[in-house]
Length: 278
Ligand SMILES: C[S@@+](CC[C@H](N)C(=O)[O-])C[C@H]1O[C@@H](n2cnc3c(N)ncnc32)[C@H](O)[C@@H]1O
Image 1 (cartoon, rainbow, N blue to C red):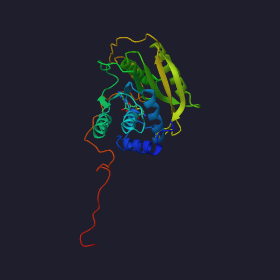
Image 2 (cartoon, rainbow, N blue to C red; image 1 turned 180 degrees about the vertical axis):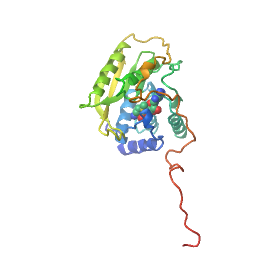
Image 3 (cartoon, rainbow, N blue to C red; image 1 turned 90 degrees about the horizontal axis):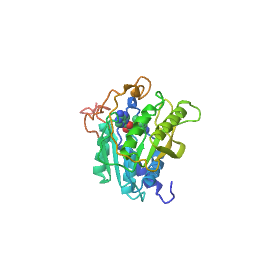
Image 4 (cartoon, rainbow, N blue to C red; image 1 turned 90 degrees about the vertical axis):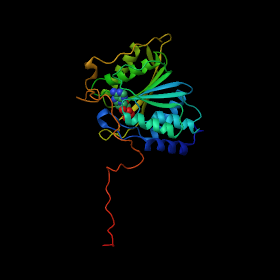
């Protein structure tokens, strides 16, 4: 982390964001990054995408919110000029937009979008960020779909930061890293930076599994008009969220507006002090 950053202020700001984060749904590989890593990652993203238009393809971690908030509070003196988060979970999109509204983060917006659908056209971003389902059971095919949507968001020109599993012992993260690099290379991108084994997660069944930052940059002259298509090849979706976990949900809908910092009334009941003392 850059030495001029007030670490206490940064951690407290990230803590505000964590309070606002909906609880993760494991079925969709929502597994949240730990707080210390969020602080470091947010500073890195803020500097990497400073002055640029940044698209997030999914963002349960809420790195987008941290980046916009730290910049707006002047805890970090730089950041993207615009951030749009595309996620299929209405709770996440709603939490982002309510936080942005409350804290007057004019640069930040969440939009409901499922990456099985064509990417909404109309603008090209300078860079994209994704921390996708990690593709342990489909050789990284789910990562590739999120990367594909990110590349479409750029109009094939710019940079992408992909956060995926990275482990010295396990075989599957190495296979996925190899496959994703091959996939991006076929679309005219090369690996311009790799930061190994950086982040830790609230992951009960493998608390030691870390992720890396893999940064892709487009080759010169790679930009092109995008015709984004929905996914019709169901073979691409096998084991998408893990073994035998095909996508079957278009959107996660928010049942009722939740204040995520507060306990839900479904979690507790009151036992009252009896009238008269005994
Ligand atoms: C799959 S999780 C990966 C783990 C990551 N640390 C997290 O929890 O954010 C990343 C984000 O992708 C979103 N997501 C999952 N499936 C999606 C889909 N089909 N289209 C768009 N977003 C999706 C989730 O809601 C989540 O916010």
